[in-house]
Image (cartoon, rainbow, N blue to C red; front, side, top):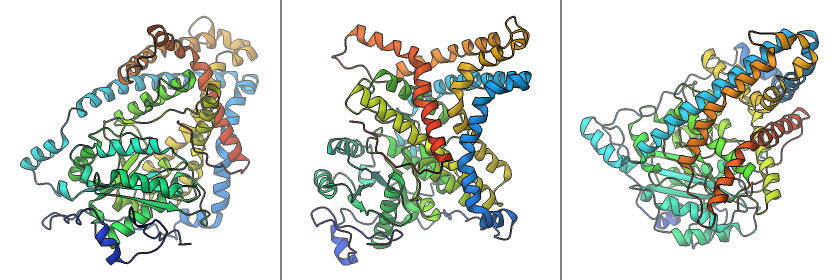
Length: 563
C-alpha cells in the first residue's frame, strides 16, 4: 500500500487501473494534449510571499504544544455546553434574573430580524448579479481587458483540475455531471477531470473506465484514482478521498508531465454538481485578472434545485432556504462567507497548505480555515455569480427521504468540530492579526450556536420566561410586555420572508408538465411547515451532533442519497 502523502499515478483509460507507479516514458504517450505553455516570462512575479512561520517560543504555540489535547477536548464539549446553557436559561433564568433573560430574548429576536432583512436585501442583490453574469462572455471580456491593460496570466495557460469524490454513486449521475463539464464555454479543452473513486466500492474502477471511454476527447484529460481503504490517521469521507486525488493530480500533472503549478486551479466538485456553462470561463477570467489569485477561494451560489419538484415538502423547504441564504451571503461583500460544497482554488495554495486533511468529515469550512491561518489570514472567498445546480436529499420514498435529510443535517452540523480547530489555530498563529482571527472564530462559533438554539429562543422565548416571571408581562414600552414585543419582532420578519418566497419563485426551475396547476399551487402551503422543519431538520440534528461530540463519540460518514 502506498503512503498517503505520495499517491501513485493510475493508468489511463484502456490501460488498466491499479495503484502502481509508471515511468514517465510510459505515461507521456497517453496524454491527450501537449503540456500547456508556461506563464509569460515577461510577467511579474505571481507567487505570493509566504508568511513568516509562527515563533514556536511564543505563548500561543507553547500553550498548544503543552495542552493541545485538552484544548481540543474542551473545544469539542463547548458547543453542547453553551447550547444547553442558552436553552435551559429560558426556564431557570426568569426565576433568578428575569430582566436579564428578557433582554437576551429581545436581543436574539432583533438579531434574527436583522438576519432576515439582510437575507432578503442581499438575496435580491445576488439575484441581480446572477442575471448580469449569466449574460457575460468571459473570454471576450478578457480580450477587452487585455487591450486596456497587460494581463499577467495568459488565458490559454490556465488549466482546471476538477476532482469529483464519489462513493456508490450511480453512473447516470456522474455522467450528467461530466456532461455539464464538457459543455463549458471556451474552456472545456482546458479541464482535467479526476474521478476520485473509493477502492472499497465494488466495481468502482469499471465504472470509472466506462466514463473515461465515453468522455475521452471532450476534456484535456480524464483520469480516475482509487482511494485505498484504512490509511493511517484517516476517516472515510469526501475530505480524505479528495486529499488522495489532489495529491495524485499534483504529482502526475506537475511532477511527471510538467504542467505549471502556478497555472492550475483545482475544483472540489460533488457528484451531483451541475456547473453553469460559463462557470469555468468565469473562473479562468478571475484567475487571470486577480492579483491575489493564490489567496482566493472561488465560490458559486449552490442551487439545490436539480430535483426540487421530486422531493418531499419539508426537504424542499429546507433546500429553498439554504439556496437563498447562501446566495445572500455571497452577495454581502461585508460578510464573512465560507466556501460550501463545490468550490475552486489555485493548486498552488492547495499545495502550500498540504491539501485537504484526511481526518475530518466536513471539509469545506475546514479547508478554508486551514488556508486562512497557514497563509497569514490573507485568504478570502470571491463569488462567481453563476449558479451551480445540486440535488436535494431524496432516497426514493417520502419517509426515507426525511430520515436521510436528518442524517445529512447532522453531518453538516458536525462542522462544529471546527470550533476547537479554530481555537488552536488562533493560538498557533500570532502572526495573524487578532481582529481577523477573532472574526473567523466568532463566525464559526456563532453559526453553530444559532443553528442549535434558534428554534427554542424564537418559539419559546416570548412565553416561557413570562409564564415563570409574570412581571415580564408588564415589562417594556408596549402593553403585554415581553410576549408582545417578541410577537411584533417575529411578525416584522414576515416582510423579508415574502421577499425570500419571491426570490425562490424567480430562480427555481419550472414545474414538470405532469404536475397540475392545483398541485403546484398547493405546494405553496409548504411555507406553513417552517416551524416544524426548522426544529426537525435544523435545531434537533445540530443538538444531536453537538451531544455526540460532547460525549467524544466520532461521527461515521454516510453518503447522502440523492437518487
